[in-house]
Image 1 (cartoon, one colour):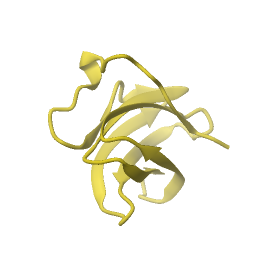
Image 2: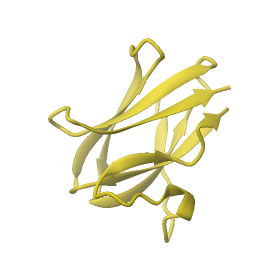
Image 3: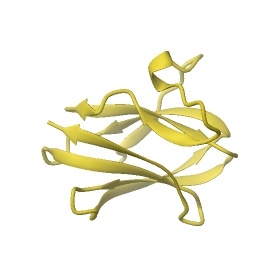
Image 4: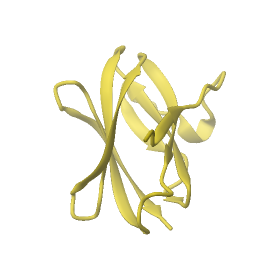
Length: 105
């Protein structure tokens, strides 16, 4: 069951701009059905987005093949309990490239 899908936009909205070479930024931190985010990557390749609960337990993860630079994604959160979660962006060597927290309500 896919929890994530790319959103193709001609340009990155100001709310999702990332100044660093890599990272993760959420459009909103309080969500109910989906959270839109930008993951900015140092190079093309395979990455993984992990969702961890408040106790750091892995709730969901999805692998994606993404390009260098900005990648706008929607992550569907309707199957998650109402709680606080951490999104982690990791590379193929499991190095964490970025983290962001959101509340599903």
